Amino acid sequence: MSVNEFMTQFIERYPDIDRFDCATDKMIAKYEEILGYRLPVSFMAFLKEFSNGIFLLDCEPIGGVSKDSPCGDICKVNRIIEDIPNELLIVETNERIESNRLLSFTTFDAGNISNNHWVFLCEDGVPNNEYRVGLVSQSSHKIVKVLDNLEEWLTIFWEQDDEDEMTYPVFHVLYPSYEERGEILYDWWLD
Image (cartoon, rainbow, N blue to C red; front, side, top):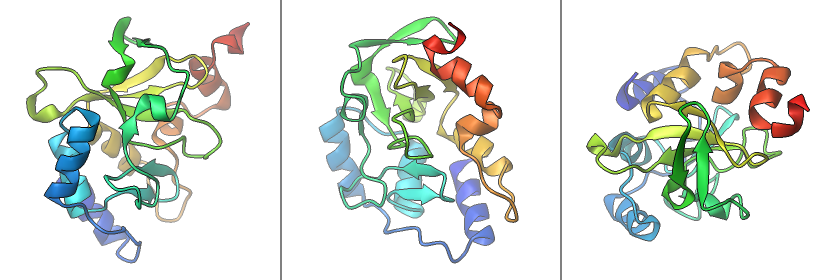
């Protein structure tokens, strides 16, 4: 699902949800300069045409490019997890990535009880800066789940939404049981 399809379907289904103000090109450019990376084209569209930060259906806190954003501003991962090492393991692919290449687009976990959160993996040479996204575990300091890009993340989020039922965070959709999530997030879980 493209970000444009997501925005259209969301507005049709939830026309009364407050989506906060939208970002401007100038605001985005300022944050790109601060962060040292270009943002994905899809995320820029989200910020400019949908919302400059939103607590998406009360379960996914998307940061914006303003300190006034309802869920805070996007940032480098070390602002959320201060003791993050210089390099993180991407568990699924056994790759390593420098932590300064990780931009947090969710600002904490959906329950607001931990610092597990989703990041852009800012790698060189990615067309339109449509970086992979990964979930960083605050406990293991590893990237425990990777998706192709923001649009895949939005697709997973949206496809499980049911107006009459509770909406779940993407990580909970991927790993429905508490035990599954524990095994993935915490090194000590299996000890």
